[in-house]
Image (cartoon, rainbow, N blue to C red; front, side, top):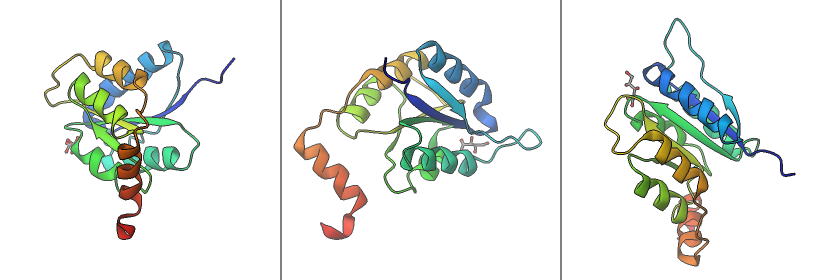
Length: 151
Ligand code: RB5
């Protein structure tokens, strides 16, 4: 039997309830989910969990990650600063599919407060289930992200 996929999860204070629902759903889907959120006095600055989750994924301890903040934008900025991370803010399942097939996104970001155009469960499940296409052009572009100076 394969070991369950390990997913690192985190949020700021604007998305704690959404993050708890995501963790519950990931566990129902057979994933091992760990919460990297650090709440201090009811607040959690998005750069903290964003960086912790991104480092856990970039370091290989976790296969993929899910991050949430109010808009998803702060988490995008935080996670994508870490080399090797391709974190995708997905507002619908089309973004979820393309972020996996083309970008091989290793972190899914969703907003806790902003408009989302489909149920978050559909976005999450689509993202988890969609494989990277492996097409040469996408592999090449992903490599360019980590080595822009060579292009
Ligand atoms: C926190 O209020 C809010 O700024 C944050 O959740 C997020 O939307 C930032 O990008």
